[in-house]
Image 1: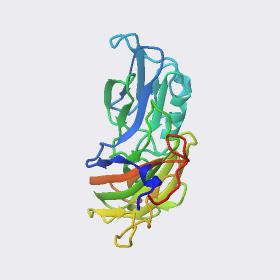
Image 2: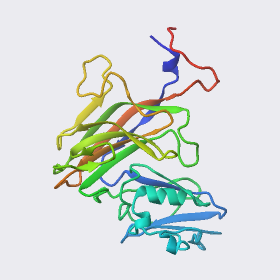
Image 3: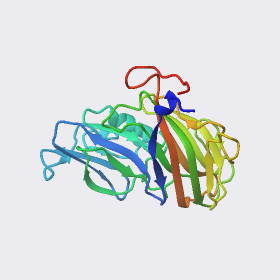
Image 4: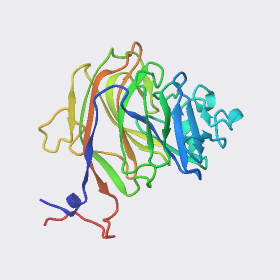
Length: 292
């Protein structure tokens, strides 16, 4: 059976991570008046330093912002300070500025920022959004380490996912670590210990995060999760794709959390799926499923 709904499915390219510290932490873009702008991540602290200017050789710190507020003209986000302690605090502050836009990638709003981003020399970010990589050997919470992928229908130069809904049909995950025991990290929906894969529906505008699904991994053992349409595949999350809320992005993490948890090593995380339009087609006609 072929349906109009099938015609509206837009497969996204398979997303994959096969090494530590290769997942994007933040995406940053300059939209101010100067023709040049760059960002630098300090090697010692992970502080984010923002510069702009008339040419690449005359860029200076952007004096319109800085954290903590007491140093607001420095152009530096001091991520060791309480005012920039989490990803959410840094995101909210930068996105209130005139010149810069930022969004999280493989990070939750509550994740800690100190030394989280990988050292970066001054890199231009005024033409296309720049991805700042994350150091996955640094704990995002006490005894909690993550590696992740974010699926999105947009970037910082485009509107949010809006009328699109993200559906994941297959996840493959493997990592090796000393498993965390005890309580583990509570993401607001209950504490999770052990090494596991977790999927969230996330919305940057609403500053919301909803856990969709999770499952425990055996250390060093690959696990494939699929939409189990005909009951022949296991393990699975059910008979339908794993779907984010309409307009949301989807964040998928390998997480190890709890007492004695270590950084996941030798990871592979791959995600397959598609997107559908919500509420109608691009021609303005609402699609309803029917046989053709």
